[in-house]
Amino acid sequence: MTRLLQAVLGTCLIIGIAVGDEPAKTAPSVKVGDKAPTFKFKDQTGKTIDLAELFAKGPVLVRLTCGCSGCDKELAYFQEIDAAYKKAGLTSVAIFKEADDKVAKYAADKKINMLYGVDTKGTSWTVFQTKTMPTNILIGKGGEIIHIAPGCDTTGFLAKKVSERIAKTLETSAVDVQKKVTEKR
Image: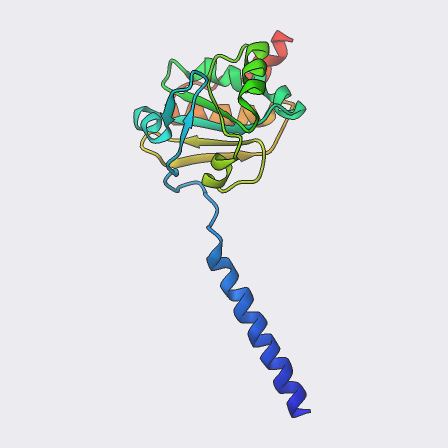
């Protein structure tokens, strides 16, 4: 019985050490209040854009996205956000996880007029420590992460909440992007 107890305790100790070491190997999630990670990407013209340079000028909405049907349906809301708050100082950036040629065709078809880039390797998802697509990250002037909105919502409700948070950050009136897109349809 003593040997069995020693074996069980020894096994638990080994498992506990292994499990206890595991969290130290993985990076913690990026969260609200954190300094935004540094990240560079190529925009639609091939120019290298430094995210830190963007948020040094004002707030930035980073949208990690793709051209799937859900992201496609949400695109109108986020283009409306870009149009609504650009003059107030917001920079919107969509980073696609598709091939350059596919994104170029998609952008032309959808008449995307906001800043966007391509990240086929998914580096931005690693940098922002997310696996959720899409994920929207609002970064304040100076680089503090203000809001994170992961997931897809084709009704526009999520975009409306992001819009309200942007308005609060910019100290301006909120634009009901959900309503504006619905009215255009």
